[in-house]
Each structure stands twice: as structure tokens, then as C-alpha cells.
Image 1: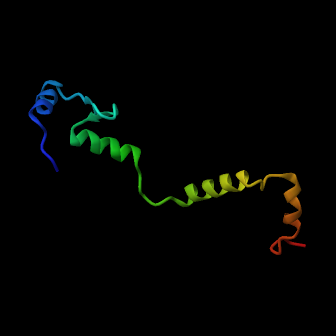
Image 2: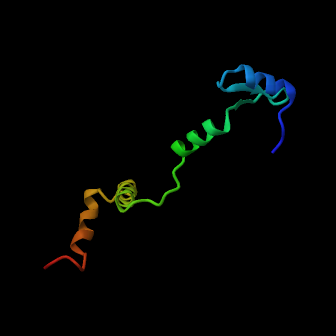
Image 3: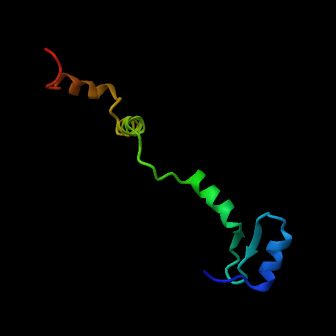
Length: 87
């Protein structure tokens, strides 16, 4: 971890808890400095690394099948070839 330069410390202290916007003079890219606790809250809301539930897996499989064309009426012939299908 690096320490903040005095100029940035002053900006953060006078921001009253709000984010501070910075610009890189060489690349003109902008960055936002936020308190670590605010970042952690955002991170937990935006990123969920919990395993998928069975329902979530099923929804993803159905969507993938639909994108692959499995809802096309011409694919119905494969239903008749299903060995699990009762005769």
C-alpha cells in the first residue's frame, strides 16, 4: 500500500466523506478515490462469488439452449428419438 501525497490527503479530508475525482495528466484517464469501507460495500453488492443455486443453473441452461436454437420447431424430431420417451 502506498501513502497519499499531502495534496490528496487535503482533498480527501475536505470532501466530507464524498468521493474524490482525480485525473492522470499524461493519459487523461479519470479515477475516483473512495473510502475503503465504501468500496467494500460496493464490491459486495456488485460481485457475488457464491456458488449458483440449482435454480440459477437451470435458468442458465435453458437460456443457453434457447440461444442454441433448441426451441426451433425443426428440432422436435429429436424429441421422438429420445430413448427415455415412452412408446
